[in-house]
Length: 200
Image (cartoon, rainbow, N blue to C red; front, side):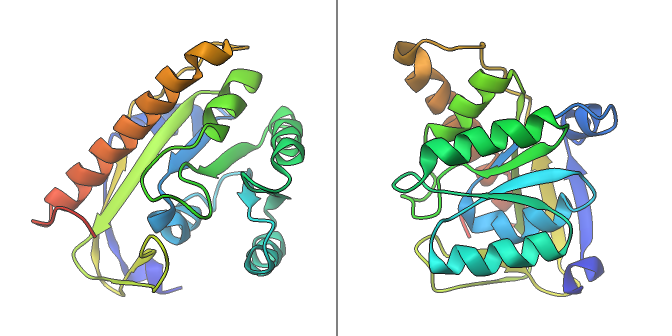
């Protein structure tokens, strides 16, 4: 695959490897712009991904399943409760969840509550992730989804784990949602600043 030609520098990898190496289920959280590359980076993990219930999501789901990955279907507006239960079931089997924090339709770089709810229900830590590349291309999508070009130099940032209390009271949900949003935006900015850019 073309991503195999990229030269990758990892920052804060201990936040990721500490759980992955011990076989502890956790939640990988990231902005939608980076979904294709981050799913590729997570390919060695036994993971479950939440995929949109849309027609496009069906195509993505089939690709992931053909590679041996588990998927659940749902979005903020369709099948959210069932998707949350499906993720919890797969995590109870030892899988790591791979979740887009700003959802399948945005708005871009604004965290939705789903990741926090899943962390609260399962007790799993959230590891925020961001990346940037010196050479990349973007798609004509709502968030300008990006992928690194062949032989690009990539920086992959892992943030400190965010631990959400089990059965978090609803009035405290916003506090943790904002904490995740801030962590992801800090990683996003640090990643692109390494290549002299403010954003992708």
